[in-house]
Length: 618
Image (cartoon, rainbow, N blue to C red):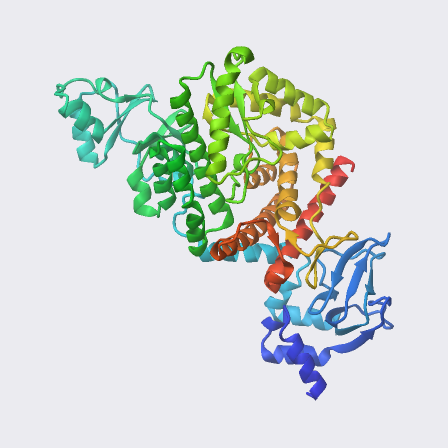
């Protein structure tokens, strides 16, 4: 090779995907390359011989523009364009134009195909869609950091290793104790007519039988815990642990519908997984003042740093942070009731936005509301609930969950209403979907119960979903709102390429990346009337319906995962540096690997937005 080819080899060998080739294959590729100099405002791919080629930009800049002159992409040093380089097939009307005088290294299509057939690394990178590359990156991260049991991904059903041990309520205490000893269990489920009736634990035997001097021949119904707290077999293990910590219980019966499936204990989790966040949750429930809760909240950033250092994914960490945010809320509500006395009417404290979706981060602000029983009389009762809401919202703010900038909090009387008023409000938002209605609706369509009378929340969600299912006018407006936020095209040098006149010096990973996927997922599930709130769960559920293809759901899930993990790594670095966390990433802080896969993620989102636009007539 002459000196010029050696220089080309050194440059090409440092760029993806050529850096994955063995030396002999790299030399063979460089030998087949030609060098092309393109003047500014010249069409790059207009070749005399008509053969397509894969081009690598050595210097300069090239733009891809569509039929109407709209900017589709921009390429700089080290970027690929042309044959097999795009995630989408180029239209005949698309044109690559040199933005600056540029130098390109061109590899003919026939040589590209030959190299791809011989080297899977190259074929993988030059696949017809970026989704495959992105999925590989996402799953590689999951495989590298997965553990045999991760409580944020595990359902309770996966933890049940034996058939439930149970007796009828008429069985004697002596028989129950004997069976517990024989089966080597610390609790006995009490079942009548195949339905859970109660539970007897070893603690019950100590305190309610031995210490109280109860006759061992008495029926277990006299000393058991009647109607114990339960969890469904599909409950996330981490959420079940939070329930146990909140209620200070060590045994949790698990139901499969109405059938008793088994019981899990706190020791089951401790034996299998580190539960530092669970200990933190238990500490929260032991506190009796806002000041001591604030002291515990200061430990949360350290917990997030430890999770990041341990390789936890963003979605797993979000579940942990969301669970702790719920726990702070519940304890503050309990303290408010202790201070104010019993509530005058039943109520439900609900959360909206990212906390409702289980996607809360330490940079998130609070969104919450109160649903009050229809017996609520504002003149008589609102002073109580105003005091409660202010106590809780102020306490959350002190614990690091900042006030909502839009004042979407229960302390605002606008978001402290009776069930009937809430139903009327949702009806108005759905029937008259103006921009304000859509703004509020997109917040409160993601609604989740946290504390109080769960039936109030369930009734409101049920009536809301009934009105959205198949409501073409409302769904068209909701789709239009979801299509109003476009992810960027990618990166050019140290700028985020927006496609408009003003390219940004920073990437807002939340609003430019995550929110468009959240909006799409909301449209899909509301159209189907599905009672799902978490974004990943919405996408997976929609992928099993006519609203979204299975492959589309899988691609969006992968895009979401990579965007969340990129933001998570950014915020973890900020925590390590002792600075306030945010969602804004400077392009020059991203590796070429991250830039490439973010571009793939943006491409997936834009593709799914175009599909929704065609389907909804936008």
